[in-house]
Amino acid sequence: TAAIRSWCSTHHTTKIGGHVIPVLAMTVGAEWCTELEPVQATARAADFTFANEAEVLHLASTICKAAHQPEPSDYDAAMLVIARWKERGWMIGTRGSRGVGYIGVADSQVRSLPVPPVPPEEFKDDVGAGDAFMGGFIESIWQALHVL
Image (cartoon, rainbow, N blue to C red; front, side, top):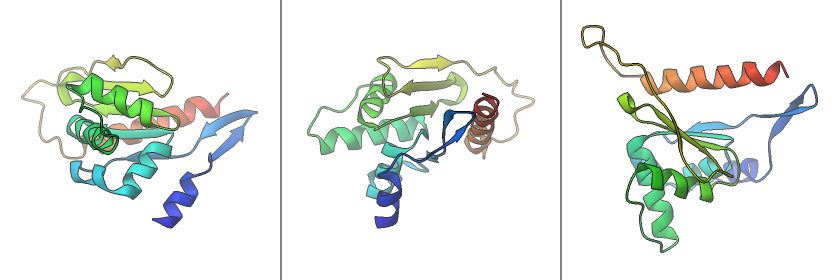
């Protein structure tokens, strides 16, 4: 825990072509993980924090309980709570067939991206879908920033 706190206490970036490139991305991992201090510290400091909808709601509720504030009533309100709590970066929340929501720390509203539907006959199993999304997202961001 001390090592994570220490690492997260400074802004870890690298410069490519004179531009600052974020280097810390993390996933919450599971609803129960949102109550763990090391997970909270890393999520708060990460440039990109990923969670599914249930994890977003649980993390926001945990933040509100600690601050003695009312819990958020829905996904968008939960995303806003997390964005205001984060030190920097973006909160990205996956919502299955309802797409992906994202919000930066300076934003006042959640933005959404739709996900194309998958026909039932093509759908096999969603295990690993969030991990695959996260990997593709990070690769896309890194490639886009690297060419700057």
